[in-house]
Each structure stands twice: as structure tokens, then as C-alpha cells.
Length: 299
Image (cartoon, rainbow, N blue to C red):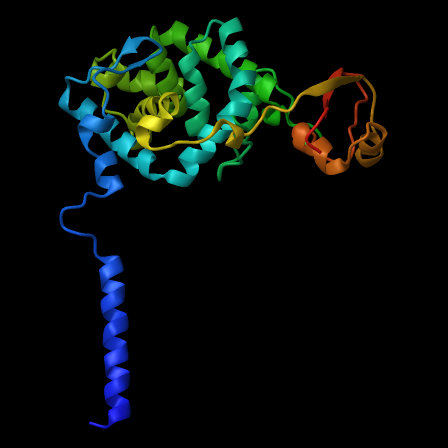
């Protein structure tokens, strides 16, 4: 073999050996991920939704909660974003839930529905609470090409509370009320009649509805104790709730760009803080009173 070839092979061997040294952990070292996933380190001794006990003594119930905990512990980006956004969104949602007599745990339902942002689903559900257009209208929200109050956090939370109260009155438990938000009152009630069961944890439902409450429970556990699950996020890294001043409008606005400039902001900032405004104008022939929020900082 030529000397040049020997040198090249020797160099390649050294490089590969070096990479293996860094890539393969020592046999006596435990990874942080392994530590995190040991059941004694993350699985709760008891759990509840809205103070209604989760029967962890039932094998499949324990396993289903375990699954959702493991999934969300390892969905690092979405879980971190949910924790950060909660600092901004929960202060708006919490007092509305309390005012309407809805348990505080329902704020985690909003987390699994939308990640606490105004997303649009493939079937047309919209907003933090993911209302379909007709359901939104039934709950008192305005939905059209100019205004979509599903994207109004306050009004959509009020509408969600209206649903939860109706479902609780129908089913008798907050857990079933939460499940019906996914499976529909009719769908859940049908399965209760077929299976002759009145408890969510004793029902065999569609996969999505069967997972639904467990996803809420998992996010509740993680978001109430983020450091326990390895999410050490500094307070300054959380997304802030930006203070606003409210401007009442009871007439049409022909140009929202011009309106924004008059308020000392730009069109982008106006739409960020008022996502229910869908067009470049606000037609208001009925002189309805709208509240437009103008931020006091953050721009």
C-alpha cells in the first residue's frame, strides 16, 4: 500500500473513532430522558378533573393517562409553547370560568383544543375553543365574512361556558361534560344508553373521545408542575399579557388601516389584538357596539 493511502486510512480511522467516543454513552451513565420517563418520577398517585376522581385503580384508566403523559412529556415544542402561552391566555380565561361557575380545570380543555391560539381545523372549527360556525351562532357569537367572534377570546370563552353548563345539566358530571365537547352531547348520550353506563371512565367511546379527558388530565399535570417533567422555563421567557385600552365603536369603519393609524398603531398590531376582525373594514349598519382593543405596549 502506498504511504499516502496509509496516511489517509489512518486519518479516517482516528476521525471515526473520535466520533464513536462522543456518540456512544458510557454504560454506567443514565440518560436524562430515561430518568424523566421512570413512572415513579412522573406518574401521579392520584388525579382528578374538576374535583371528580380519576379511578387510577382501573388498569386501562391508569394506562391511558400514562400514555398521554408520555406523549406530552416528549412533545417538547408544543408543550413548551402551551406553557408560555398560558401565561398570556389563562388570566383572561380564568375569571370568566369562575364567574360562570365552571371549574378552573376547563382551561386545560382549551389547551388540547387549540394550543391556546386561534387555529382553524380542517373541518372549519376556529378559535381557541374551536367552535364550528353554526354552534358558535347558537351560542350567541357573530360569524360572517366581516366579523368572527370565535376568534374573540372573551366572547368565545363565555360561549364555551354556556356549553359546559348545558352539558353538566344533562350528564350530571363535569367529566362527561368535557368529553361531550369532543364527542357531542348526542353521541355521548347514545353510548351511555347502549352501554348502560353513566361514568366516562366506564364507557367505550371513539378513540378521540376516549383520549380526550386523559389529554386534559395530562396537560393539567404537566402545566401545574412543569419542572417536575423537565420543563424549566424562566418567568421572563413566558409570553406576557399585554395591557390594552378599549375603544367602543358603534358605527362602520371603512378603512381599518386608517383607524389603526389614528389610534397610534399599525394594521398588523390592530389585527393581532383584535383577531375577530376578518376584513380590512368593519361594516356596522345595525350600529352594534363593538369593543376594539388597542395595546399600550409591545409595539
